[in-house]
Image 1 (spheres, rainbow, N blue to C red):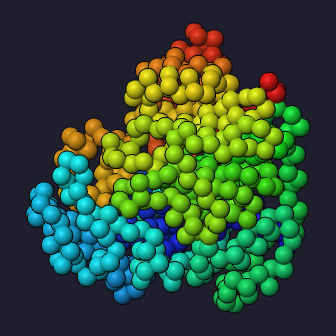
Image 2 (cartoon, rainbow, N blue to C red):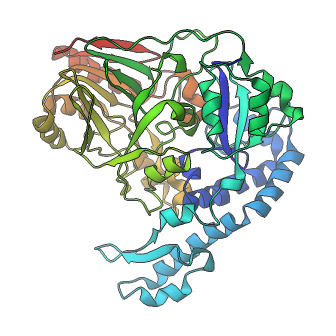
Length: 528
């Protein structure tokens, strides 16, 4: 049989949906200690309050376990299980806090060498103590070693196999996935090669019983497993363009740039195929082989493990920005991808390029803003030159200094297509990075430091500095199949809508074709 186009394999870590900050061990330890355990403790004190809060639109995205009927005993068991099997991770989180406190008290400009004897045992051999040039002390984590240490998560890696049948799913990051008769839950490493055979079954028949046995699913899960397959053949994939470029918008920040020779997919977050009212492209609209997946930055709406693992068997190279790494706020995206089983991952600094078949290049671009003013290097826009055409995907970059794009334009020339994110209100720093902070930020500072894209003035300054023929606003989080991750106001009344309207009106006065994208879009550029 074939794998259904709406069959989903959600990667989990000890029953929690896998997201970027659950991949690197130090960050995962802090999430488990500061998010998972407190959420479960809170639920056990007031399960009804959680159920009511999770159903309140204004509270979506908050720390609420979202089950309509009480699951108190199961959550109690999971909490006890967590304290037992992730006890070393909880100790690691405590050690990070303790070492940070030690450095704050004693790292005041003199040599840090005497402090190594006071490093907590959980971190011994995994950190270097350092100063920056302003004599602020800090911790450098030996990231590659930590993945291979006792803090690696292999034994707790899982998948939940299920069907997704509608767009509107509950917010996922605050609710553990509990076993029930509707899904098949199995312990399975994320990097396991057997998954590639399963996902290839979208277009190649497999023996369902044999695949079940290969993945280690017991008989109790047979019914849930069988629902994932169908005898109906998939629809044929569209052939690549014979000339020029075909550019398809798959929703949010996901754009497919295709020539006859090369396919490039940015920030894949793709809808499954099921009856719906909003036209969209799905996995079946991707080419059989994706030459390059490019990741702009490490936020959950741009690096989606669930989607990346589904595409692994048909992907050539994953391109990521070169991170500083070894710091809590800027973990290595390359190591994350390798933990998920990708073997060909390339890091690029700004203006480093990869040559493309048939001529042209894929070039990493500087990326300012979006990360709450944190010192994060792991972020890039990308410029694609193929068939004499020029496309830039800038994701959530802010034109904080338009002079930057004058330099970029002087280097790369004018654009045919610009894709720019304008979700310019953004979340406060504590929502995205609160679990990493060692000291609480006051509310005023927290609200001023936001993860945001460009506003109208910044977007206007960008296209004035780097001319383009067409400008498209994307990465707005409006597609309904993303709401369980982003929890963005879907009313159409938030700031990003009005600011992007103002930017597009400006484009029209300059003779620039523009549109705020939603759902799907195809743009064809003849060779130049």
